Image 1: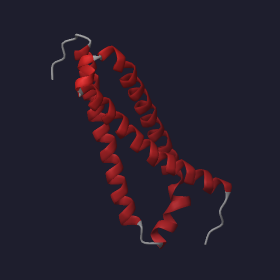
Image 2: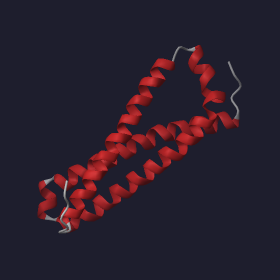
Image 3: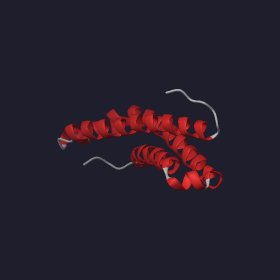
Length: 129
């Protein structure tokens, strides 16, 4: 068993927050989209607009965190995670996890594109698909 150093703990926290930020990004995108598509938005668009704006801001911050923490994770991976993962036969699970996380980010980007489009339509701008 390897020694737990303060740097190892920081890397572990970074990795956890990286995965969490990915989920927050995807959920923020979906929440903003479903909120804009709900009947309540048609009845009170001005009241819900700050909520949608907040969700978009949280989502974009989470995306930025995902990218920044991903760089840190990639740089620290070989030293802090690789040997433990290989030793416990976790590489296939890590591959599947990252396929899922990358899919969440791509789906979130697509949904945010639609959110942007719905906001523009709601503001009276003509948006062509």
